[in-house]
Length: 499
Image 1 (cartoon, rainbow, N blue to C red):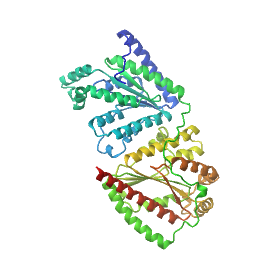
Image 2: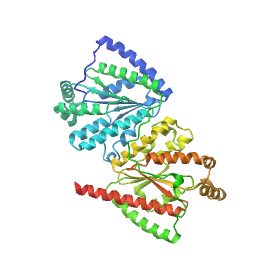
Image 3: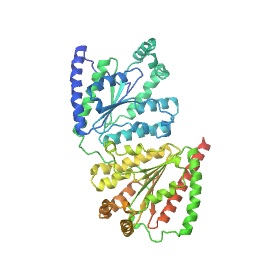
């Protein structure tokens, strides 16, 4: 892609100055429209060392109210950041609706560096490409404008700029060994950059290759493309996006109506014995999970009053409190609602070796948000695939992903609601909304059936906890978790031995 790049016709000096004035004013006006439309804009700058990424960002942002943008310089990941999924530190920085995020380098820099150093195998590199392209598509499908610029200069131009920086003691700190290595191996990097640009170029998030030999000319090209992108995005902002076909291997799951709840119970004495044994084993497994740096994500969904809280308590009471966090998920806060709906879950992921327990999850998109009209039909229809992609990222990172649906029947829920209503110590657990939701039992049943059918993937299957007897559901959940952790440790050991 880079080798075939043809330089655009460069205007003369006076023409550049005149056109810059026009494009700068356009951006001033566009920032108002971006704010009004609630359009989140990501402007990503990649390119050769000393191609002027920081300089062009500095000139572009002068046209925007500083309250409406943030600039992020994405350096090499810290040891702490390396304990999270690759996408984590990038997705944490995505802008809110109506605001701009400018990025001095993004996931291209880290990927190419790891690829050329050999720390990414060929299969890992292909997986990384898939992660990047699917994430960029998910961002644009959810209303983001993603503008990607690659600032291109020749080897000779780069060498000249590096020498100028090195010759001045006030600027020589800006040149590091990576810049010099890149120039010495220019053609190797040229091929690597070209393949990356080709692999991640898409209609929804295309690459704009910019001739960066002259600073004002660079700025003009960026402003022209950026203004054009904003105009197109504003025109398309209210349009629906395609629903993608499922490509994930799915496990066969029963409909809620076919789940047998009668007879799924356990006597108190047996419950106490099994609970004690499972707690003891889970405590030991947590230490091994930490030692092998395996992340664990436990997701709970289920009917109101099904016993999720008690179930979670029986799991966490066996764990060292320093190694887990429980996230009760309520309605999104304004700053969360202003971003991609998965953002608030990306930012709550555990680092490797730790566990995160979610009391309600990202599945709210296809349940409460769907049925209460908090998102469009196109939004929740797309979400099945987006969620499967999200969970695949977690699995590929090495996480143990366990998803529980806590199932009770309608009559059991009614009895538990009534007991809560009549018990002063438990009345805080029951709300008018809970009673209203009971009226939508059938609609929720259909939505849950569709959710489980479309998202019970091989890498992140659903587990049904029959919870008319809460003790039975607790023991089943603990046994599933223990078995999953054992398997993860065995796979880790086998993988280590294979190496």
